[in-house]
Length: 181
Image (cartoon, rainbow, N blue to C red; front, side, top):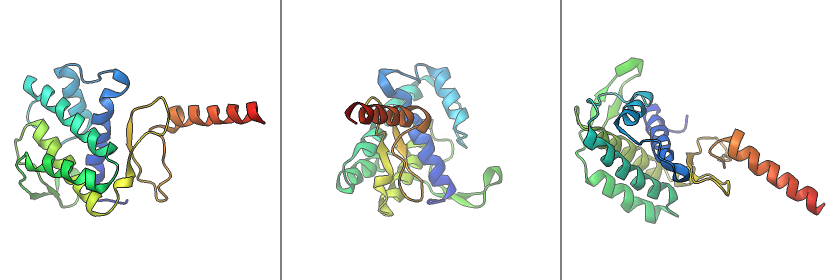
């Protein structure tokens, strides 16, 4: 594990959120889909999701995408600071759901968008402070606009999914080599 469990969990949630708007499609079209996303993400301490949460989460999603596409830390840091500066940060220790003591940064009872902004914003801050921004990237496939977090030891992950984007890219490269060879 490169980062603490809660940081990696927040990074995974953020990737899923950002990728919920890939390819011009919308995978958070309504309140029920947002509720399903929250449940699938296993976020703790989130109050019932309301209609106003949907628009706020979509705006937050676009801001997270900007960080993934930032060319360097100098461009990413102001984006992360703006995310964190816009929400209440209330650090507290917790040991819920069988995990050892760890820090949550959201104020208990905060809306889902605040919860995401604080927890994911802090995960981004940890990534930047560790000098690991290059682990956040866009998929290398030409026809994909998804993002990923490369948690591999040797930083070799290039595709959001090796079975789809990775396989298509490798097959295309093979066919190109066969045509020219």
